[in-house]
Image 1 (cartoon, helix red, strand yellow):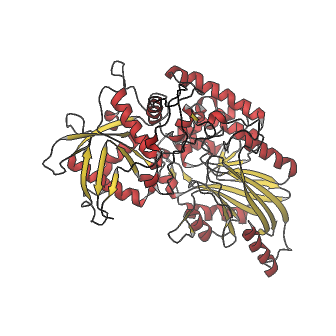
Image 2 (cartoon, rainbow, N blue to C red):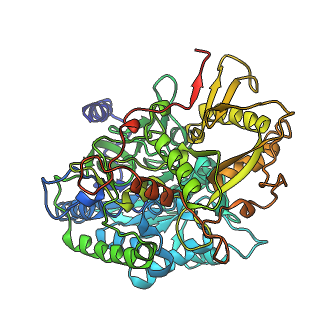
Image 3 (cartoon, helix red, strand yellow):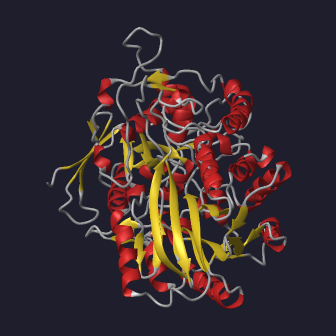
Length: 600
């Protein structure tokens, strides 16, 4: 923070253009990004007690964020702006019933949020469901102003008509104008390229070029609206390049679009302790899940920042939360418990297992050192082989769907919400959250090709890095593509990888991941041909045909989900200390490598 403030002091000494002219004022911005419906603190969540300080190690929680916003409002009643840069939804049980009873957005308004941008996960269930979520919240109370600028509606489809109506009625706008302390401030939201790529359900909407869209909005704000300050809520993100320098879509945005004063970034879950300065644009981001609240205090003259102070405020047990907010959230917990968990034989606060060590999967770190990924893959393998009518040879899970970690906290007790926070993405057709588990059959040679591609993809993009169960692979990284895999063992036995081996091997993952397997031929322009098959060897043409039925005695497909697999697996752990709570076994204390590079 000292370095950041020093830079602005130097700018003042050098006399950056005409500070004495035009409007001047002081603005305090509080900001978050990628909250992912983490209304409660974590974890273990059972230890979260926001109305009391000094008694737990949990972080985040809307009750605590609300208290921090209230403190700031009392100090700065006329110049405070509270913003969120998208992905406020999706990640906990709380997002499940948003389309029915609309809770989170109207709660955020009560907490003091002024403007919220839309991220890719808001579109997880499609634009029509997002419209229902927004309207359900509006029915229950006032909501923050919503923004997304680079969206284009499909004139040939009716599937996005209800969402388009939100724009025609100004419920969602491409930009908003707000006034604080005599300053006219323009705020607009942008969805980035990578965020668009990982949001297939945004269709039939189109997300337009973020740079061109931002330039267009900035021009309107400067020339037509004549604002004094411009803020972009960019769900695009930043990262470090191979030289350790800041890079990414929002750095590019700041370089190519002049006139943006502050970019409040999101999507990459990056913690930026000191703002990134690109010309006259400052980029900030808080990490994710409400672990930090950003505070940006800015003095503005003639559309420029003349001085500033920035800090990330840790949202932790040092903060006494707003107990009324906590009470409101407790009501939502009862709804989740009564509608979802109790009918399944679970309970929101029922102890599942306990751990005296953390289990981590850091997508931005060394994934080979993850002890969580192997556990999750083992859970899928166990679940299919014990709870379904069939079995699977191999189970896999990608790092990109692992959203959190297991923390030992003080007592180490994990509950079902801790599990769901780890693997929370997707939906099927049964009203229960989570991608359905699916199974396909491929030959040994096809498995070899798939492993070659997955290893390559994991090196190119960490989200594609996969963890496996039931399989052991040796590869030589020094060899060229499709020559790297040396041996594959299934169930401890080496398999024949030649084309003459027609034996089929079963592969389980979530349905979203297995769609990727079926699309490989098209993605590689026919160079790699992998044909997912059923048990009889018949090629699968409809992804739903490979969904696993976990109760063949009931009509339809009784879906299984990743989080349900993990719950069942944890319940199967041995109770080693005799307190009637299963204990995480020692084998997951350290990483379990099932894909080994023998070329090093």
